[in-house]
Length: 458
Image (cartoon, rainbow, N blue to C red; front, side, top):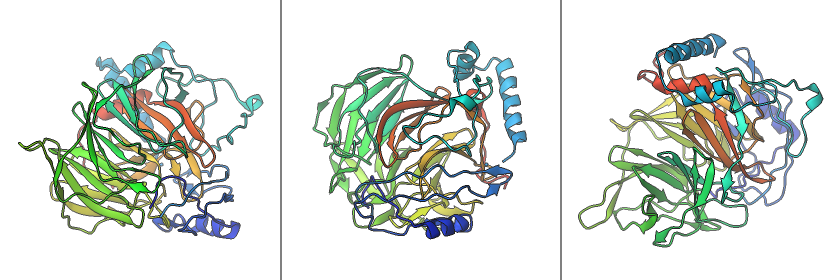
C-alpha cells in the first residue's frame, strides 16, 4: 500500500449500486485495487438516505488523480448547551466562549449542516441567496484563518502535533517533493516559524507518525516515493535536536499510513502498509531509553481477533481503550469500528448503524464525542463533520456556521484551546496550504464531562 492519491474508478451503475449497499455493509468495495495512473471522473449519487431524520449528502464529483495505493437528536445538543451555560455561571474558564462573546471572530456566511453541498473548488458560492449571519455563541463555526511568518508550503500526509501552546507540523509532500522541515505555529499569535534543527539527519517523508511524549516528538516510519522507512527519530522541541534512536529487540517492518499513540510507558503502533500489503500488527516501544541509550521494541500479542489489515485509518485513545475507525486495504474503504482494551489487550468489534465509510480522514476526541472530519468515503472527498457519540455509539450531526473547507483528505488536524485546527490536505486535484479552525464554542465544555464507558448507553 502506498500513501497518497488513491483513484477509485467507478462507473455510474456501480456507483448507484454502491450507494444502495453502503448502509448494509461495513465496507465500501472499490473496483480497482491497482489504481491506474490516469484521472477517473467519479459520478456521485444525488443524496444519501435519511438517517434518524438527517440527510447525509454527497459532495459534488471531482476527478481524482495520482499514483496507486495497494448523527442523534437536537435534544442532546440543547442539553449540552444548557450544561455549558451552567458551567459558565460556575466560573469555568472557556477561551472559545470568550472569543465568541467578544465577537473577535464573526463568520459571515449562512449556517450550514453537514448535508449541505459545498461549492466546487474554484467556484464562487451563490452570494445572492446567502444571508449574512453571525454564529450564535453556543454554535460551532468554521473560520479560515490568516497566519503570519514562514508558513508551510502546500502539503498533504503531514503530521500535526500539539505540545504546550505550539503546534508542530512535520514532513508531508506536495505530490512531487517530500519535506523534512519542522514548522511551529504559535497558537496565540498564529505566527509560523521554521525550526532550525540540529543533530541527526532526518529523511524527507510522508504518511509517517509524530507522537508527543512530554516535550519530545517520536517520529516513526513513513516514506518517500518507493521507499518505506522503519527508523525511529526523536525530536526534543526544547533543544531542537534530532536523534536517530538506537533500537533493540524486533523492529516493526517498514511502513507508512499507520497510526501511533502514547499510552503509559510506551508509544504503540498499529497497522499501515508496506507497499505490498496492508498490515494489522500491534507494536510498542518504550519511551525511555535503557541504560545503554537504546529504545526497546516489542510486538504485542492480543486476543479477540484483530481488525482487518488497513492503512489510512485513525486510532484514537479514549482512557485505556483505543478506537480504530475506517481506513482501507487498497481494495475496500472501511466503515467498521474496533476497540482495543489496553489493560487486557483484547479486541472488540462494534456494529454502528449506519457504517459510514472513511479513509484519509481525521478523528479527534472531544469529551465523549469522536469528531471525524473530511476524508474520502470510497466515492468522493468530503467536508463533513461527523460526531460519533461514544457512550451510545451513534452518529450525530450539528448545525455548523461559517464556510466549511473544500472537501479533502490527507489533511492534519489537532485539538487546542476549544478549537479544532485543520491544515493542508488534498482533494484529488489540488494540494492545500490553508488553515481552518472549527470553533467548538459551547461544545468545548465537553472535555469536562465525567469519565464514561464506551457503549454504556447503547
